[in-house]
Length: 275
Image (cartoon, rainbow, N blue to C red; front, side, top):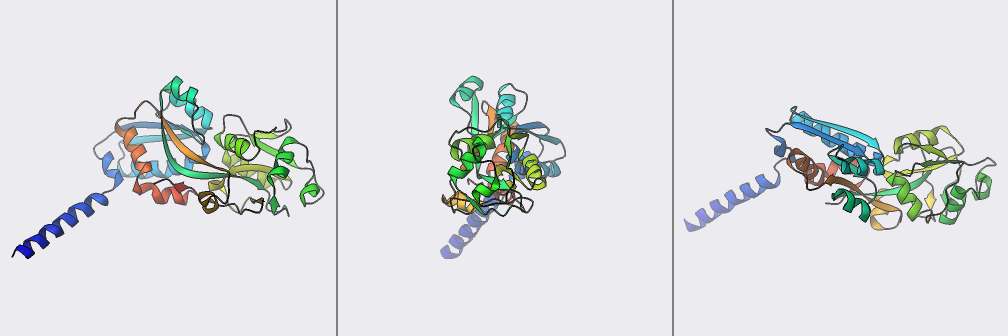
């Protein structure tokens, strides 16, 4: 009898533990209402939109808006109280954290890589070659194994976290030629490169698809697994930032994105979940 009771208790405990472990992160939004505004890094948008869609489908009384603008914009807007969550593809500086009272929530690992048009025959570039290209010292593709054609440079504005990572970790904080075309987002960069056979630019690895090509870097293949294991070195964290400790449905949103329910969303968006 004792054995039977013990077994029954163990079974009940197992049910309770498993029920708790597999409870949906969407449960936190039951009975809640209100608005959440999000802006900033464009690399974050696929994750933010998918998470928001799940939450709003489960609870129509919650409305979530997601906008881009770049990492600098995200940090500034959340710091000034214009949005609830400011996304950034770089860590906010000590000055920004102190000025705005920011709390940082890293949720994914991402790589940033060079991209060229798929028709370009170049398969690999070195860091040294890439730095000279962006500095305007190498101006013809034939000098790096391509065809005889002028290189068309594309870059992001200085508010971009993608630019910050690429400039610091691949370009070594070197010069970017003033002749470079400036585009506003990862999506716009990808579109521009896909339409220009002589173009070169850079994007979050999570944005790679068949419309662009990522040449190897010093022989290292470019993908998120290589970024995760350190084979590919140009990596960063993706952050959600709030002004002070988040509360209510904003806190629930952050916990949802950082919780088990969003692991697959983050992976499907091309990133590596931190949890």
